[in-house]
Image (cartoon, rainbow, N blue to C red; front, side, top):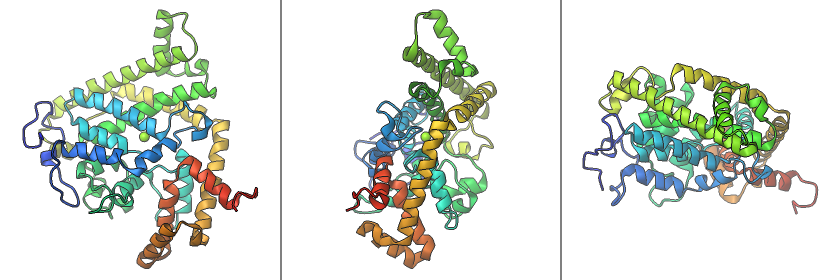
Length: 390
Ligand code: MG
């Protein structure tokens, strides 16, 4: 629709559909949407996106209905990233597409699942969730008649591949080049990366306190929290419990977003990139926090790592997750007849192409695609001794 016209709401340094590096399989332009809106819509209609609802963020999906899942996390990332994108005159549609797709490659059971699968794959090229997100949108979604994957624009794929090992980057063509050449991605990709951190650092506090694994007293050790909490308690001395936490967190997010916008604006004014290519060639990222906010965020991250992610109760779940992933992967490697027929076929084709490594990759794709509850159910069906396997 607006693809051919200059857009007054976009700065020169924003990504634009008309200067996109395109799709892998050329397609006619959409009629009433931009190319990046089409990408976002394909992501929302994908199977991988629906699976995010039943994948763990920190707490396993069945532990409670109010905790974040990968789906609600992704929506929070999109909300934060879009607000900043509009303020900085970046491409909001691209920002939204990257945000909604950024965690598609996560395994069941959060980071525990990914670590376990990476260990299973250590002799077959390893497992990286960012790369897996790209594999999903490039190959594994099988919904369209003309191509495998979602055939997304280069800029969306560039944003999804947030990190990548050099070894894998060298096999990915254009989208892997920036890791080898040490250049930057688009500002929309840089922004989504920071919005991801803002979202999880803040919602993990909320989930942590809700679960009882963290207390407000403990949280007051953290500068980012205590600064806002003290202001809230000064203004609303009667406020307690969840409302005091939510009121604090909304102010924390506001504070971080304002710092991000103001710091990034200054950096953009100084660097004056006049196109997305100038952004890519710039020696450093341009969308970032101030040094002071970065430090305060590091403190919060460290606190969450020590007190929540390694909390004894979370750790017990982590151990179980390792056990489930290792057992499923091992069983499918030993005997592919345990896989659904369609996946047995994928294994056979992959074996012809690249032997055991090919087989392992297809099985990793299958296990990574499982939701928490599907993985737990498969474990029960394969190894349970209560008769359910029959
Ligand atoms: Mg994320």
